[in-house]
Length: 478
Image (tube, rainbow, N blue to C red; front, side, top):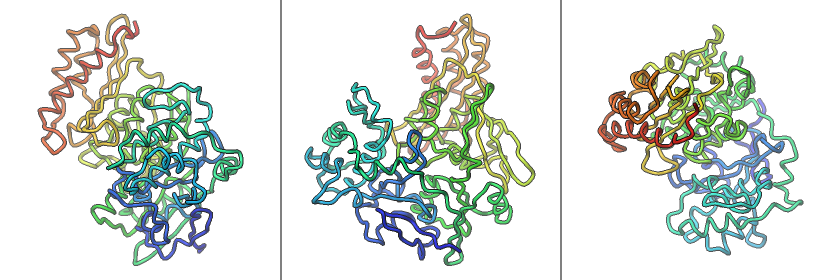
């Protein structure tokens, strides 16, 4: 067995004797890289942010920021990590560190290394260099996208000096070693087996091998970005005897564009999908910025979001509205399941224990009138109280098709079939929308909980359709 190793700030370090559940954050701090901090242990605060070398969208390799508190260090066998300590020193600050310092972007300093790493990932983003100098409240004249910091929280400094620092950084120098790293090949996925105390972490090399392992260990926990399982490990002290990592399986990382459909690999991260689709699926383009934070989207996957079966996962309502299906593969072969038929109960689905989600298929063309409405207590980096997605086709002033996906109002994500029927064949008019909105308020079985009351959720369902109509304005296709 080859010893599992990880490169941290250019130094090759053995992962053993770490346990299969040891997070990257725990591992780094044990080795003295204490710039990364634990704030929430849920991937919400960004104090643990570090840089990870991954296959690029523009260049061969790109540096992305990830939550070190969620990822098992075993999942990074053969990978390259840079912490805040690896960016600069007190005598030779990294440009991002220098801007944070001179613009007053740090007070207590607890969150600062995480901000620095997230900011550095955006600093090195290759397509940032193509910025045209225009700016708005969320984009600097240097091309810096503030969404890169949406997963980093500051409790004392305030965000203006941090934003000022972000908008002031220039372009990397030609001899910057981390910038030069982008021209070289990314780290290759390494098949891994890490065992300790009767628990095992496995990264198979192929889909076939993964299915064989899953058949032999039907109770295994399957992980991709670990944005859900990592929380279970940290907050609820969950442990698994057998963990199978599928995030690097090549068969699950394919994006295909066919004349009649798109096929999105289940292990492609949301950031990869967002950048590679480049707005070509408008409803997904609305979803991505509202899905957690950039730190989460850098590792989270569609397959994982559907695999957890959560009734408040943001992707499911959008995919329901898009008429998506799930490609599920196992020992008996592959089958295609309409997403509307996929969920069978709270965190349950038709997927069998020895099957994996290989891809999500979205039919083409898509409806021209679409919208995603996420109702939450915070604008970004929050769990939905209610999520509603619309895909409506209007021709000649009449609704020719309507698909509406709902989250947060039942034990599973659901289609709003009654509301769709109330719209179909009728004029796209205030009267039709008002009648359908009242129907929409009766869909599902919303509950009272700490996020929202059932009454509020019902009201938001109806209001979302009214807002959808108001937003359509004069842009409704005829």
